[in-house]
Length: 342
Image 1 (cartoon, rainbow, N blue to C red):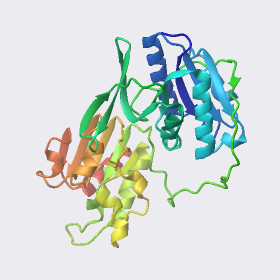
Image 2 (image 1 turned 180 degrees about the horizontal axis):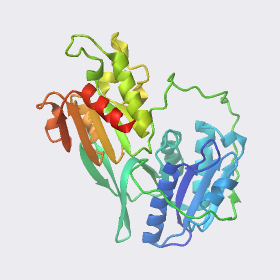
Image 3 (image 1 turned 90 degrees about the vertical axis):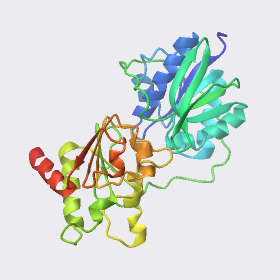
């Protein structure tokens, strides 16, 4: 391996100045590639103040820690992020660049690859090195087909899917940080604040062990020919509070708000699973009042242990899409479960 080239782990900072779990997952992948190829590992950081983040990964074994810092790089912006990433990649003489597939990086990495004359692959779920050749695996055709890709073009930017790899863990340590200068054009945009979807509950917890999936059946007429949306809300939120589980929704449920039907007020399109690029990877999953519709179960397949509750023994969940199917009324089952958790 030419000592002049390196494997780069490229990361942006979180609002609190630390590196998030996706960035640490990408760092671990970059470390593994570097070890397999016998190439030096370089860490690249982008943010307002990178000193705390550099100490956070101080024991990762990086030969160099490069940084682009300043108030201009605190917020996500295409012009500043693309310029920072390009400058770090050039300073590192990067052969392979590994970054987390966050929304901030995903909007700029293709442009950075074009500027560098390289290539980019996104939503990567697995990276391997065989006989000095790097290959990546990702899903195609709505995550029905897994393909393996290897490229000759360099630099090769790899955006790894958050949650698909183990995060790097190590002790904090002081390391020298090399500042990388960046010449920015006049910035035509400025960040004035952050607006979040209206919701009174935190229902999305990517690191939760359990994912509870709610289907449209919660809002349909029950055996008494009446809807019980408020009761459904209490059962679902009670379970989330007791277990700190994350909440997912089937497409049919999150679409109800646009159809003039009763909805769960805390459910938004951000909760939908199975949408492109949003594959939940929780260890356990419990689907309730769902039909097993295809857009939903495409994402559901990545749950390690899957269970479902449905009154219909012939529903889509019974056709090999769940490990255990409870043929029962989800309202009654969740009442009993919440009583046990109280």
